[in-house]
Image 1 (tube, rainbow, N blue to C red):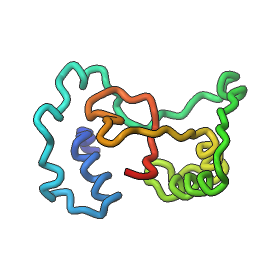
Image 2 (spheres, rainbow, N blue to C red):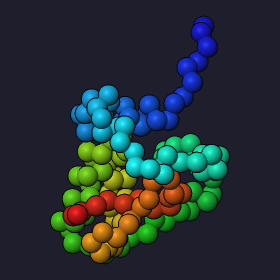
Image 3 (spheres, one colour):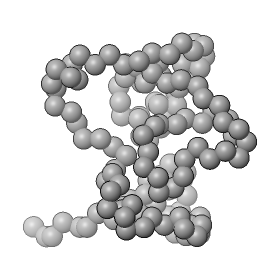
Amino acid sequence: MGKPEEFKAVDQFRASLAEVTKTNPKSRIFNQAAPGAIPNADYLNRKRGSVFHKAFDSGAAIKDFVPPTYQKAPEAEQNLVKLFTDSFLTKNIDSKNHLILAKAMFSRNFSSNQNIIRFGDMGSEYFVLGRG
C-alpha cells in the first residue's frame, strides 16, 4: 500500500468549482486572484479544514435540537428546496432535511456593492443569493 496523497485544498477547490461550473480547471479564471486574496499564514493556521462538518454523536443535545423556522411564501420555500436538491453542497441530504433547511432560512437584503462575505474571513453563515 502506497503513501496517501497529500490533500491540497486549492486543487480540491478548483476541481469542485470545475464540477459545479463545468469549467476546465486549467482555465485562467482560477489564476486571477486579486492582490491580497491569498490567505496569510495566520489565517491558514486558524481556519476550518472544510465547509463540511463531521458527523455528530447522537447525544441529547442533538436529539433535543429544534431547528428554527421563519415564515416565508410557499414559492420561496419551494425554490430553496429545489436549490438544496441541486446544489453540490446539499444534494446528498434527504428531502426531509432540505425542507428543514428551507424553513430555517430567512431573507436579508444588502445594498448594491455591499460586501456580504470576503475571501479569507472566517464564516458563520450560509448565504443563498436570490438576485444580484
